[in-house]
Amino acid sequence: MSMPVINSDQNEVYEDPLDLMNEIDELKKEKDASILAHFYVDGDIQDIADFTGDSLKLARDATQVKTSTIVFSGVHFMGESAKIMSPEKRVLIPDMLAGCSLAESCPAEQLAAFQEQLRSEGRTFDTVAYINTSAAVKSLCDWIVTSGNAQEIIERVPQDREVLFVPDQHLGRYLMEVSGRKMILWPGSCMVHEVFSIQDLIRAKRNTPGSVVIAHPECPQNILEITDFIGGTEKMRRHVMSIKEPTTFLVATESAMIHAFEKSAPQHTFVPVPGIMTSTGETCACNRCPHMARNTLQKVRDCLKNESPEIEWKDYFQKARDVLDRSLLQ
Ligand code: 13P
Image (cartoon, rainbow, N blue to C red; front, side, top):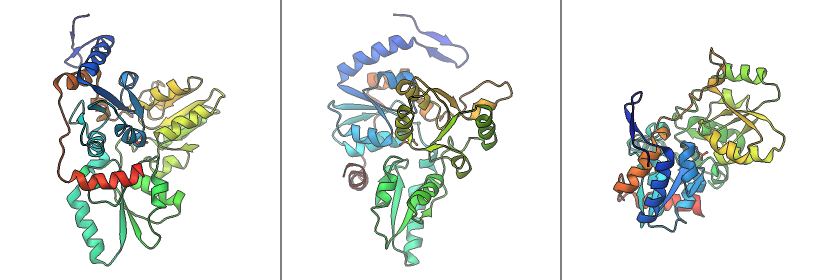
């Protein structure tokens, strides 16, 4: 086994990724654990995971895991949702500080106050929350959606009720467009999907003849308007797999997604959108979610070894559980 060395640039200990992967494999057996990894975490973590996928698949996978422990490599709300749906399991996450700008944009007390205001105005509505929310917010809602099932769930809300959609205004606007259903939108947004420059994207498209723009519906309208294919992470992955002819895709989503695309459809070239037009002409993946990036192989190893940090069950999880089960499993 190679010796750890100090990485002076980042002031952290460097360890050989292959050693870490072996250690993680051993710990998984010893601790009776499975690893779930979202498409937005580093490729090396996706490679050692037992389950990879989008938010919808992983939420469902969490209920099928056979081991007594789940390590959820993603962000906090994902681990929390896994615990809510499988309370008997121990759910560990590599870094408790891996949050979500969307979840932060909708605090439970503010949502409760807004719902109260709407009710006092005599309005009858269902609250539909994107899964990128805290459990406290989920417990105030009628439905939970992911990018993978949002349209289907919105169609389940009776026509005589309004829809309050939280917290992503861009996903909400896109859903209004595709479903034809008017909704009250909460003004939240994802810090990653808001960074794409429309000007850079237009120039990149023009300078790369034949290229195809694929984007997540968390992107603002101006980006989606010049996008060729819009979809959540799994829908985009299936789309690139369905095209046999080698193609250059300009990718407007979190850059770690490119790892999953390259594995699933190696015939193509994938270019992250924001970095393509830097002054040097080099591509750079500056669209990295700082929360997802908190997941490292070291932290996966450490949380298995220390059995911490762990998502603890809270009383209000029960209400959130009913909503999650009804929305994602039925
Ligand atoms: P999906 O994987 O469901 O498309 O969601 C992306 C995301 O926002 C994860 O935080």
